[in-house]
Structures are given as C-alpha cells and as structure tokens.
Length: 225
Image: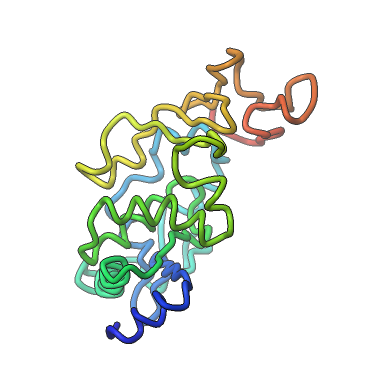
C-alpha cells in the first residue's frame, strides 16, 4: 500500500477491516491457524460450540471436508499471503489511519483472535493491534463514546485476561473473566460471578426479565458436556 492511499484513509476517517482469514489470491489465512492451532480440542470452544459444528470445521480442511471454503487441504507455510497483506496494517496504523478487526464469521469464538493475530503478522505492534481491537473498532461503528476504552460514563464491557497481550498478542485468547454491562462472568463457563453468583443457563433464560439473563443468552443446543 502506497503512502497516498494511507493518507486517503487518514484524511477521510475511513476504517479498513482487512479480513485476512479470507485472503484472496492465495490460500485463506484461516487455513494457517487450522493447521497450527488445535481448534478441535480447544477447551472453551468445546464448552460452547455444538459438536457437529466444531467437527465439521476442524477435523479436516479443503473442498472435500466439512464444507470448508478453503482451496487446499495442505500447503507449505510460504504459500500463505496474509503476512504480506498484513504489511499494510502496519503502514496504516503508523500513519494514523484507522484499522478495525473483523473475522468474517469464519470460526465463532476463536476467529476474531485469529484475525487479530494475522493482522499483526505484518509487523504492527501489539499495542496498535489492541487499539484496533478496541477503541478504533468502537469508533468505526459509531460507538466510540460508549465502548472501546475504560472510562467514566462508558459501558462496563471488559475482557479480563490471565496474561498480558502486550507481551504476546496470543494472550488475547487467555480469558479469565468477561464483564458485560457491569455483570462479571467466568470466561470459561459464563457462570455469573458478580453481582449475583449463578450458573450459566444452557436450556433457557433465568426466571425474570431478559435483562437478568446471563449475557442475554437463552438456549444453547447440542454442546459437549
């Protein structure tokens, strides 16, 4: 990406969401993570994802397996183009242009983290990538005054991690707690911790209004127990 394009994004205030998990011109970026990460046995995914959904996407890849959109079942790592595509992310952020994170819905739960890590493959700093995942994304969808940073008069929507993503960006997936509108949930189970301790409701919402339901979630079907 040339400097004039970076300046155009900066001047216009347009946010770029690269979606590197779907990298046209070469194998999809998601295939790199399916090959190098054990998504099938991911502990958190196995709590929340239906078994057939997870099996179809993680046991095999390629046009003949699981309905995968990928164009190859096996390839050399050097065949991936997303690290080169990600170089413009670094140029954009260092040039004060706006970049957001969007995972294209490729794998619910981990897909957003994979996209964030793929975007960092071009050399952007962990700090800039966290800005893209938080305040820049919130501002891109018009909610920068409500979300994206921890400050007075904003919603208390917070992810609390076990380890520091500034040290290693992959620590974004090492989740301890999730806070949604001031309610604190266990990151592994979504059991509510505060202000009322109660288990995550798998078969239906808790008694009372929808506002009282943990994370606003009602029914989850066919999950691994």
